[in-house]
Image (cartoon, rainbow, N blue to C red; front, side, top):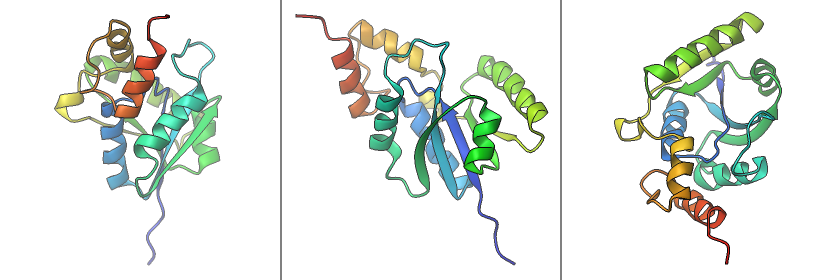
Length: 165
């Protein structure tokens, strides 16, 4: 009997990618044969980085992991799950407040596509409070973001928020 090949889709805005994101991606790699980390194109958000820049940051930080592919998508998540051949969506949960939103989203996705399963993974406690929004605010105020993001992202944020000369 052969083992089924399991692909998971790990979607997000990743604006910017944080060490918490990378922690969840690393955990997903141990559970699935292939993890597609996919940057969602969301017209409702005003991103700090372009989709292409976010894809570059992900390639630089986790693209070399065995079983990880980097992609982007637009439209419904359930359509991306089908298009990528995924058996599950992986989402990170930091706190109870994340759970409420993610739970509703998972149920909506399952309603739209009964085969769409969602797996929730918690990051390591040292990343449980880290959010992209918080990192951007800290970077804007010239705070130390190095403990929370990969070097390539820290440099990109410093460049983005550099004072004009």
